[in-house]
Length: 493
Image (cartoon, rainbow, N blue to C red; front, side, top):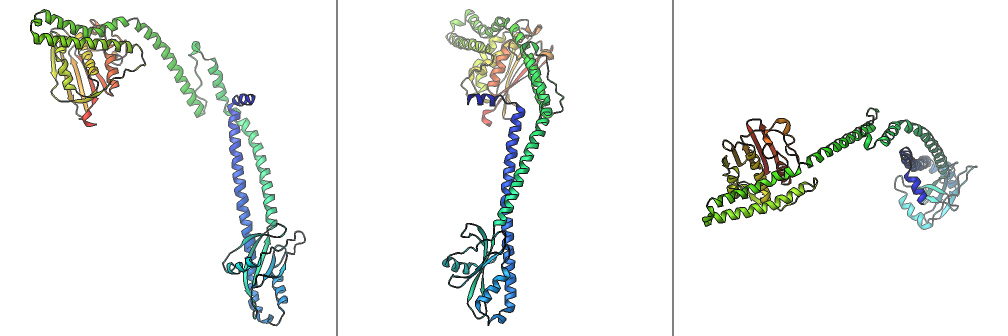
């Protein structure tokens, strides 16, 4: 059994297709043969019945003309005369009286095949006298030797005598022989057709699948060192061309993946510098509060408590940021956070003081007057705003720089938009598509202080994507940059 399974599993595609087509062809022949057999059988039986009915109809017309002439004849002679008019090579007949007794019968007169007239019981004949009045009534009955007959009945009345039941039967032996010859011929034709199909299809499939065989030979030559090889795409066969195109696309993606891996390894060398950039934001905020306390705010209990609470919040966020940085090193792993309905206006209000400390001498413009509710993790939205403001701060002049933060409903009321805009150095258009890539750094004036967009904007993008939002950036060198974050308005869901 194992040997059979092993051989079966290694059958070529050509023979698997041929085998399945052969099975389908055989099933089709069986269906056609069975359907043809039964339809032909039904047709031949109906033909025999129609022949019997025509004889019966002819007998009725002739007998109605001679009833009076036969009044003086003996009944047996009349019965013989009736029988003689209907019995031939393919028809037998019987006459049954009103008591259900067979009083006269005669087999068909064929020398080659002579069949006995089928006979029913007296009770059955009495029932048939009632059913015989129904038009086109017939049934199939076997005689005493087991041969089948198509039988019809008709009530018949001879002048001056009782009503009798006339039975006509047509043996179905000839029908069976016709069906046998037809079935034998059909089987021979089917076998011949299958044989011709196997001969032709084997040659056809061999030439049809030639491009596929060439593809397998090429694929066998491809390995890590030969990714430049490509499969032919113009074989004039739609399926193989599509397969070749898909496989070549896969090879191109593999080459790109290996190249990207090389680039990532180079970027990983700069990971420490990028991590420092991301950690600087909370550290700068805590450092700012410490400086405020050292300048005398510690003597004011209210300011002291407020500063300490803010520093506690920043230290907690710092720990969470470290965890995020560790998770970002696992490129394919997602960080799951609990979300709930949040008012972005309240989130900005909570971190307003930290933002003012972060921008230092720059002008901070806040346009956050409208209640905007989103489904989000509060700390993560803070992280997004911190990172965007920090980017703006790092790339604007300390004294003439302006950083704007706005939260509003867009022209589409189902969308909440958070915008962070600065008047800093701007970003070159060629770098806009890459600034959200992890470890990506721009080697120009915009990265002069912080090391560029290494992880900060990557974290922003990851958080926004996890919340089902979108992030866009518009920038022009020398005029500044604007980041737009869009979330679904939870009140419109």
